[in-house]
Image 1: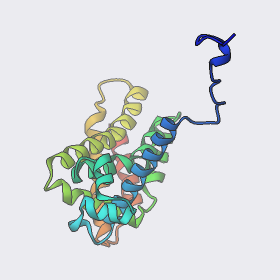
Image 2: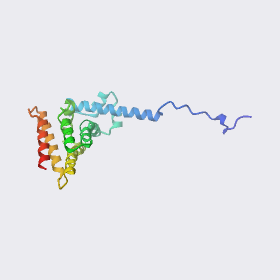
Image 3: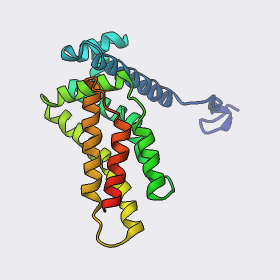
Image 4: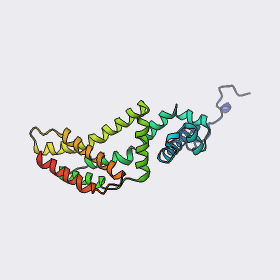
Amino acid sequence: MAASAKDPRNLTAPPPRTGATPRARASAKGEQTRARLIAAARTLLAGEMSERFTTRNVAALCGVSHGMCHYHFQDRTDLIVAVVADIRPEWISPLEESVAAPGTFAERAERVLDLLSRPEGTDLAHLHSALHWHALNDDRVRESLEAEYRRWRACFVSLFQVLADERGGDLDPRPLGEAVAAAVDGLAAMDSLGAEVDGGAALRALVRTLAAGA
């Protein structure tokens, strides 16, 4: 007797699982392409082509079609904003971790000062300069970059919050933290011009003076 349509003998067994599904593989490949585009964008922004930064040039450097670049990023601004987020682990996250790790104010401050005394890489310094330049001409880039700087400044406020908790009373950590953040920013600008200033010593003196005066 012929087997019916519902007979188990008529059902084809599903293929054995051999790892990621096609959709997962496509998603992983898309993430890899996106990461490559961001890396190419960083290279152009940190180099001499910052003023000629276009999605077409990024796609060409990455080795993908211009259409593929626009598949992942709507326009040039989207790509620059992605770069802003991409560099966070290189300058903000280590600072957040230094402040959040256990210890007294003095111990945490020493970790922060040690981190800030390390020279910034040339590519990262050039990249920051390029992002600031684009922020002058693009509100979305400016808003994205300002959000990162708010997060960066908050690290110093959190550091002095530890001091406030240790001492009690009415100590306001915000003006102290923001003063140090402003000093770090100014010293970085001076360093980029080749000024002969010992930034590490200056910051250490500032932090100790503010802590003692508080």
